[in-house]
Amino acid sequence: MEFSFQFSSNGLIPVIVQESSSTARPTGRVLMFAWMNRESLARTLESGLMTYWSRSRKKLWLKGETSGNTQRVVRWFVDCDKDVLLFEVEQKSGACHTGYESCFFQELDRSAEPLPVTEEKMFDDQAVYNKPA
Image (cartoon, rainbow, N blue to C red; front, side):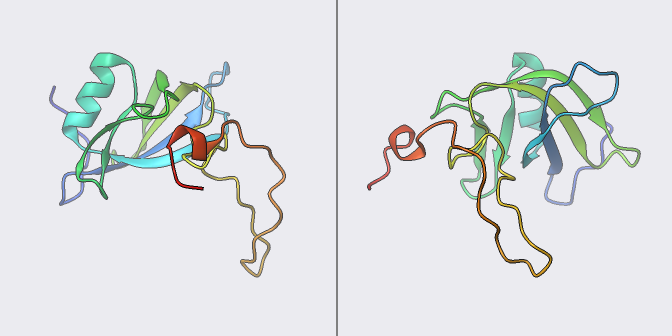
C-alpha cells in the first residue's frame, strides 16, 4: 500500500485511538495514543486489528497479543495536515496496560497534582502480564 501521509523523519506517524461511536462524527473516549510506521498501518488495514510500532521495543506490536485485549478497527480518519491518524475501535476490555479502560485515567488539578482515580480497573494487570507482586 502506498500512503500519502506525512510520516516523521524516523518513519512514524502519531495515532489517537478512541472508542467507537455510532454518530457521524467521532465522539468516543480517547483510549490511548501510539505510533505507527508504514508496515504497522498496512497490517492494521489488512487484519482489521490495531498494530502499532513500539518505540521502546523497536518492533511491531499487535494490541492485545499478550493480554487478549484487542482493538478492532471500526473506522479511521486523517487530520487536515495528514500527519496524525485517528482510529475508532471496538476495544476488548481495557486499553491501558495498567488495567484501566483508557490510558488517560489520571486526572490532574491546575497545579498538575494528581487527583484521586475515580474509575475501577477493567482487569488485573498483575495477573495478565505475570508481574511479580
